[in-house]
Length: 514
Image (cartoon, rainbow, N blue to C red; front, side):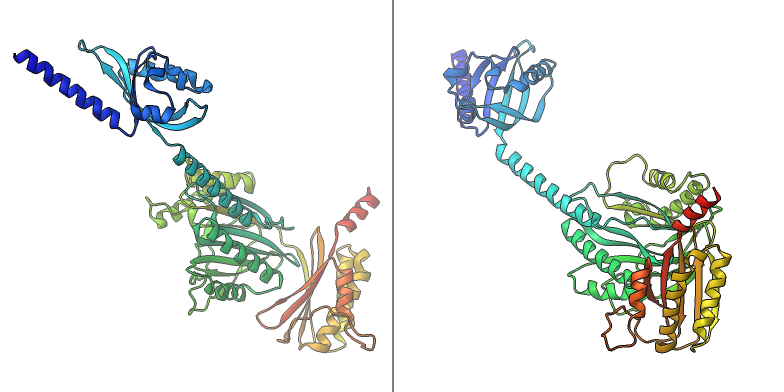
């Protein structure tokens, strides 16, 4: 009697188990180790479209897409070794030819002797989830492409008289590309504008703000805006943007004068690497980030030794969740000294710096930007004459310029240079306040002529003069005959300059002497 009750109890448990399996939401099937299906629940029928009578006794290959046949053999082999396989994502075919993305869990079934004789699997349709993941990945990729395009828009030019190496690594998290930007700007007259900035955050929003600031900064720099005024203008611009935190540093380097003018808005320090690999910080007041307002930014003018390299970067290079920022800055300065003691050019130096600060990692939580800018190892030839603010200064300046050009072997440029210099000097005498300074400089690439006055009147602009006007044509001549010209504000007064290319002069001289 007891044995009958035991059998009834066992049968009841089996019926309960079968009921639970049949009511399960996941497809459940059992298969032998050679892949023959021995059990098939109702959810499996709803998922695959086959009834139990159609599949029991048939091989599991019925459900496997052709390109995954080898996968099933590998899974059964792992089950035969006693492995349990959790949440294995793969694909399975249905009776009507559709291919589903599925999540499969498998585990071995042992007989009474403990030997593995079969495998049980539960399968869940994740086609909708995988589609959503793909669409999200495509959206991220699209936004990343747009953000990267905004960052690369107007790629920095190569500046005559300056060498540069840049490195940029977009974040590997989220939408990747963020708000880091850098720019090198040919300001003319041998001067170079250098800017680096960081809009906090990542993705399209940060990249759009970055693109706006980069374009605005370049336009202001090309218009001759001094560093402090440029930063203050960007500060005003940024205040109109919602919840933006932006740091930025702008420098104007004048290798011929041997000086650099700089202004910082809360950005990390700029490092100077001397020709002997000595590293020091450019002593620029840090200031407050753009958009904060209330505190004026400070501009400083500092010496720039020949052969110096400027090192600029964003916080992604030196900030990590696991290290102190001061320790990382110390590591950077130590690395710079070591690298520049033996690097073969700026590109090699940039590679070594990146490897030393961010060794052997492909994951970056923030954008990483590095900019190295080097200047010639020798100053340009220069000559300067101080002149009174009166009419006699025009012929005096012409004579000084002619003697200088003959000394430098540039007499072939004399006619054009003298004509344009006369126009600049005449404008300064007529419309500005003396005394005047005539500065001439020379490089293998170009000749520069600059006239500085002490006037605070607006900087001159080329315009089309009316037929009845006797003046107004001087700057049109400069516009037509100079290779480049422009104006810039000084601490007191302004400078108007033009340049003429000298490469053709050297080519002709070489041909005559050759």
